[in-house]
Amino acid sequence: MSYILVTGSSRGIGASAAEALTERGVQVLGHSTKPTSLDMIAADFANPLSVQMLWEEALERSDGQIDAVVSNAGVFEANRLDRSDIEWLDAWEDTMRINLTAAAQLSRFAVRHWQSRGVGGRLIHVASRAAYRGDSPAHWHYAAAKGGMVAMHKTIARAYASEGILSYAVTPGFTDTAMAGDYLESRGGAGLLADIPLGKVAQPEEIARIIAFCALDAPPSMTGAVIDANGASFVR
Ligand SMILES: NC(=O)c1ccc[n+]([C@@H]2O[C@H](COP(=O)([O-])OP(=O)(O)OC[C@H]3O[C@@H](n4cnc5c(N)ncnc54)[C@H](OP(=O)(O)O)[C@@H]3O)[C@@H](O)[C@H]2O)c1
Image (cartoon, rainbow, N blue to C red; front, side):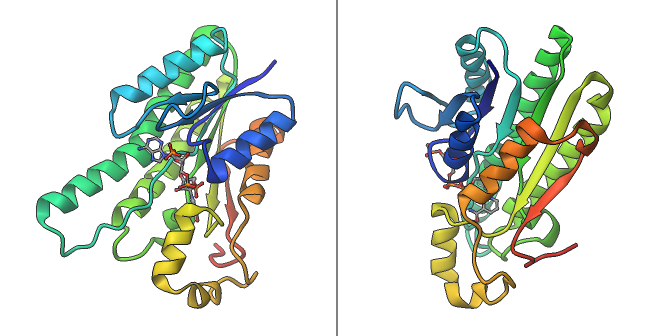
C-alpha cells in the first residue's frame, strides 16, 4: 500500500489529484483548512505550527510510512499597491507562508523521514506559470512564492537524487477551479482566453493526471523537471 499526502485536496486541482491517485490504488492522506470530513486532516497553513501537526497526523494515519507528498494547497488573493503599508505586508507574508513556507516545511519533514528510513520518496510541487511569467500587478507575492517554489524544488532534486528522493514540479496556467474563476471574472474572461492558443483553460483533471504521473510513473531521470500545462499561453 502506497500513502501519498495531498495538501489542499478538498477541492479544485487537489481534489482531482486525490481522485486520480485513489483510482490507481493509492491511499491518499487528504488535507483542507477545516475538518470537513474524517478523511481530511485539518490544518490552516497561516499558522506555521499547523504544518508540523499535519505531518505528524499524516504519519500516524499511514503507520509511519509516507511515500510521496503533493504540495498543492495555495491561495491567490489580490494585494493592491495602494493598500496601507501594513495591510500590504500582512498579505505578502500570508501568501508566502501558505504558498511557499508550508511546502518547504513539508518537504523538509518528508526528506528527513525518507533519510531516516533509508528509503526514497517523491515530492510533487504544484507551482504556477507565474513562476516564469510573473503575474498581475496585484499578485507580486503569488508570483514570488511560486518562483521560490520552483527554485526550492530544483535545489531538493539536485541535493537528494542520489538517495532516491525525487522532486517534480508542475506549473499550470489558468485552470478551471474557484481560484481562477474569481480572477477570470474580475479581469474579463474572454480577453484572457484570447491569450491562450488552445482557446480554453485547463481542467483540474488534466493537472491531476500530471500530478499522478509525477507521483507514480515519472522515471527517476526526470527528477528536477518542471512540467508546464498552460495551453501554450507561455512557452519557454
Ligand atoms: N486554478 C488555477 O488557475 C491555478 C493556476 C496555476 C497554479 N495553481 C495552483 O494550484 C494549486 C491548487 O489550486 P486550485 O485552483 O485547485 O485552488 P482552489 O480550488 O482554490 O483550492 C485551494 C486548496 O488549497 C487549500 N487552502 C486554501 N487556503 C489554505 C490555507 N490557509 N492553509 C491550507 N490550505 C489552504 C484549500 O482548502 P479549503 O477548501 O479548506 O479552503 C483548497 O483545498 C494552488 O497551489 C494554486 O496556486 C492554480
